[in-house]
Amino acid sequence: MKRLTILLTLFCFSLFATGKEPAAKTTYIYTKDVDGYASKSQWIIEEKEGVWHMNGESPGGKTLVIASPTQINTQSFTYQSKNEPHQYAIHREGNTLLITQEINGKKLEKSLSLEGDTWVQEFDFSFKPFILANHSDFKFSIVHPQKLSLHQMVASKQGLDQIDIDGKIFTALKVKVTLRGFKKMFWHADLWFEQDSGDLLRYKANDGPNTPTSIITLFSKHLD
Image (cartoon, rainbow, N blue to C red):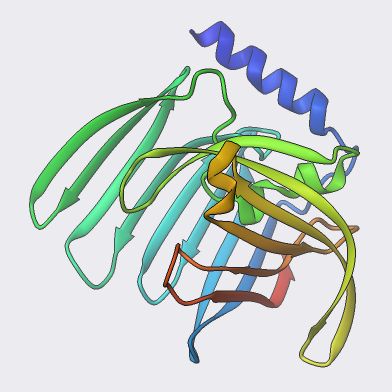
C-alpha cells in the first residue's frame, strides 16, 4: 500500500512538474460574497519538510490541509467550527480515506475508497500545478463537507478570459469544475487563475439547486 502511494506521488510530480518553485510561505486574503453578505478569509501556504501546509481561517472556522510535495494530492484535511461544536478530519491511507467527525459530542467514523483516484479537498490552491502544466483536464475526487460522501470531479481549462477585480483587468485562465458523468448537469463551478503564478483570482458557484451563489475573490497576497 505504501509503495502504491509513493508511485502515485511520483506520477503526479511527473505529470505536473513545472520547474517553478513557489515561495516558502505565502499569505492570501480572499473576500467572499453570498447574497450581499461579505466576509474575509486568510490562507497561509507554506512548505514544511517537503510537504505543503495550507492553514485557512474564516469567520466560520479553521482549516488545515496537508498536501503532497507536488501540492496537488491531499494527504489530510481537518476543520474546526468556531460557532458550534462541530469538527471533522480526513486522513489518507493508501487508497482509503479515514474520516472522523464530532457534532455536539456525537462521534462518527467512516472510510471511503478512492479506487486509485487523486484526492483534492481544497482545489483553490492544489490546482496550481495543473494550471501551470500543459494539460487541459484533471480528474480528482473530493469529499462533500456536510454529507462526507465521495464525489468524482473533473476540471477543464476553458481558455483565457478577462475579469475585473476592483477596477483592474486581468487576463485569466478560466477553469470549469463539474461532477463526472451525467451528474455534471447538476452542478459546476467557474474559477479564474492568474496565468503565470497559478493563483486563484476568482471562484463562482453555488452549493446546489436553489442555493445562493458564492463569489470568492483574491483581495491581497503577501510573500514571506
